[in-house]
Length: 187
Image (cartoon, rainbow, N blue to C red; front, side):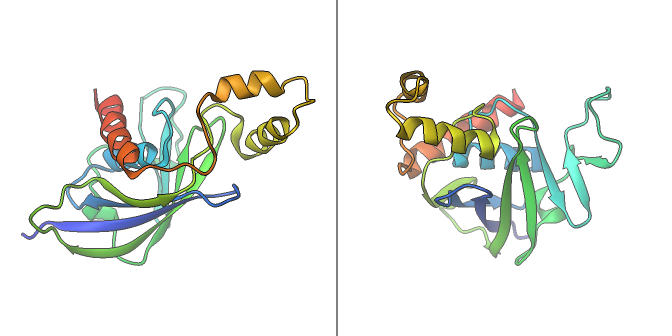
């Protein structure tokens, strides 16, 4: 059987300017590794849970405890080739507290060629918001505080953000972060 490569466009919802990535994954990648790859490509720190929402249901990681949702399916054992096909769109949720939602579209599918090394980020724009900033509403409030040097929390937010710049995106850093996130979620 010929292995396939899926090209995904991932767009963070409810944030302006738009934060997006184009990335590749292989058909034999487990769904949880695709989630980790998305987290890395976007720039999240791989420190929170995540889930996928397809038309056929919600997939998350099952722990056999009170945190498990009865309405969700276990992503364990589910491969990209089981759920992805060209043209479909699905939701990806990162950090159930901050509630970051992404729209993912499968924009292309082709046989894997020599030299393809999925998962890989191919393009993108803008930095993703920092982890633990309170989701879209908290991010907007943070940006307002950052824009007002007279705000009493301005210096604290600026220090917390460090070198973070809203318009900065690096494919090289995204690809390193993909590998790091996969390792974090699979170790």
